Image 1 (cartoon, helix red, strand yellow):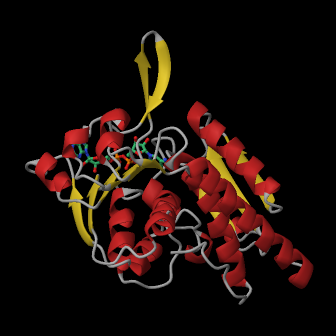
Image 2 (cartoon, rainbow, N blue to C red):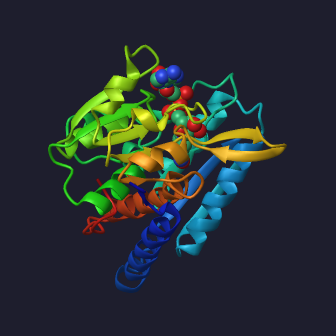
Length: 296
Ligand code: NAD
């Protein structure tokens, strides 16, 4: 069987269009422009690229983008003061502190200082608790993007067996909570899981979020399963730099019913969901109806 390719690039474009449409209505009908503030500490090259692209897409969607670039040796007190200022700024509906932070800064402390209703990354402990108890929360962008693609492809996920490989706080755990929320039977597999191939073979839905290039071979995949590959791994092959996922695309695509490619699968959905979360936060802050299809 040749798998259907889930086109994350096209799907992300449709999410961005929906966001832009909603932003235009917020401006026209209510005179409100959603605003996203991104705080970058230091000069990590990958973080700089992400922040640039977040700012660009925020503006393209018609929203205000506020960028705060701070020196690598910024003190915790100074960073907390900036977050506090953004928490109290009514023009800012979403706040994102780009991770990783330099080693002298306590990431948990900083993330938990963001007002939960402006925490568009969904990493604040309150949002983690709200998601875990099935209440309205801000949902982490990458798992939200995966959920949107799964819902779009399958309609209902109810009763499906889902295996999430990886238990990180930013992908694996929230992904598992979202699948549980959609009534899947969920297994979280990780580095200590016994007989991972057998666990994965049970799955109707496999979400791989490990960070190991092409770790999942096709013979772990149940015939017809849906494979969502979150991994972004840079490797060198035939003298060229290449981006590959956590699953071996060629062999998995032979057995899967549907699969996301890398690049062009989950990756583009992450920033699209950040924009969606900013609009959602703006609507909630103003007591307005939330856009349909942009939240969990
Ligand atoms: P992480 O390093 O925080 O977590 C990796 C998880 O994989 C851990 O829970 C670990 O238990 C598990 N693991 C490690 N080795 C394993 C093994 N041999 N078998 C089974 N499980 C194993 O990583 P993360 O932040 O969750 O990211 C995972 C991948 O997703 C990375 O490649 C990252 O670059 C990518 N990522 C992509 C996006 C995106 O926008 N598409 C966003 C976030 C992360």
